[in-house]
Image (cartoon, rainbow, N blue to C red):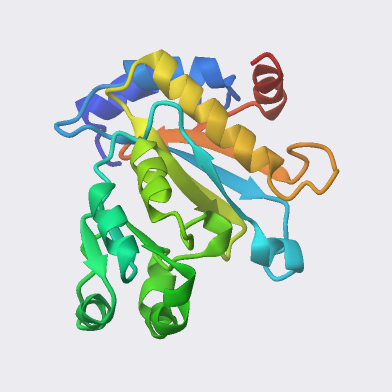
Length: 238
């Protein structure tokens, strides 16, 4: 039998694997967990009651602006030409360009987190689909990353706007901040993210009806199962 580490023993005293927690309770538990040598990201994992192959599954995605940001330094690429280049540069884009930038990516470079493009560039960027698509980096109108206002989008991304999307296993995994954040900041970010996911694709139906299970965890920590009914109450009380 594998011997438990000191950290694993401590974790076992902090939470009950069989319990479903309210969001506020879960965040409090996360903050009490033993810290590692790096600032862990906090993530939400959602299982959806949606067939990934049907029309809703294929389009189930959305964006949300986290009130306290993600705590992550976001490296932004902008595909544009002409006057938009100056606007993007003034807004703080890390990499800006057109043909040369696309050639660099085709050569294997992908040292960025978000890609933004003007509509006129999308025809040319299509050839990068097989490279950027699997990495979730392809500009998309639904996520707001295909835009004529690149400056505004850059500022939104840097301020904490993130995208979430259902994967082939009907799941969503999305970051919501760092464990070094205050308990209140983590809680507010989590509420915003969960509210966006529960409200996505409802099309007039009950909010959250498509969510089967919901977990919250740190990068290297165990997942805490959330009580969906309690989370719904917390959302309504905001």
